[in-house]
Length: 304
Image (cartoon, rainbow, N blue to C red; front, side, top):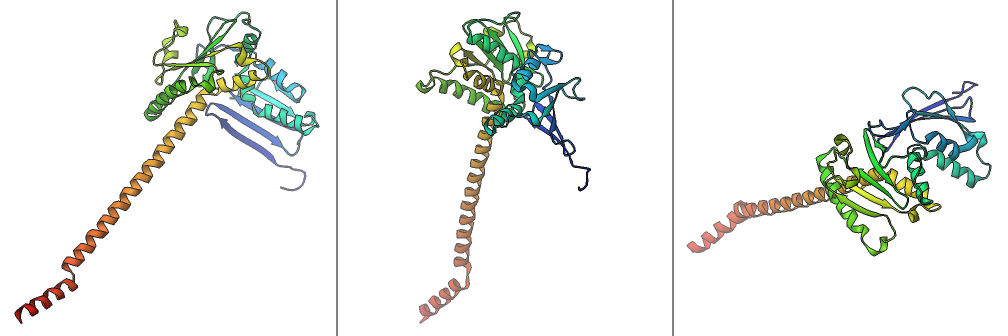
């Protein structure tokens, strides 16, 4: 539209089926963008502070500085609302892209705040103060994954759940192969990985509802070398999105098998069509006019 009215942009989107975003931008005030984030519904065992993961507010301030202002209270049906001042982005293009990428990774900043806190202490070979021996963090809607922090290692356990029966079978097979692949020499420096159909000992005493996993349990053991320096952010992201990583490969496997099945069916149909065509040709040869004429001619020659 023309004139001074401007154009408003109002966009809703979802990431990994569990984090919802509401992006608002107006041409009447093009220097400001408002971003609201709705986190997955937390299960009872997950630890929250004022409705947010431990350290989320401090993590937002540390990640974005003066670029972002946290609005209190957040918009209805959302857990965090941030006002992004675009005029305070760095003038250098490379640095500006870094900040914008960080804003796009707000899921990691908010949900990964307690995970990063525990792993940062692991890097210094200490345990975060006032933390339980087993910490439940929001994973997906009404689902948790668990951390057992120690000074020399952090054990991370995922109860793996899938709704579709085919996904359960594929995920179970994939996770077993995933553990086997970890044992190759090329991955010696990666965190150790284990899969079990039953809860590992680290989850002893956890509520039975939180252990209702139909695709088993995956355990990673993270050591200080895995969270040194720049490795910390990568490790946090990998652990935070592990279920989405498995779901992606499960869907890819399912799609691949469907494609192979369709191709197989198509080749069988073509073979049947060829067989049908050959049968029709033979039928015409047996009952066709050329065969009858040949028979009459042959009969006449016999009479002579």
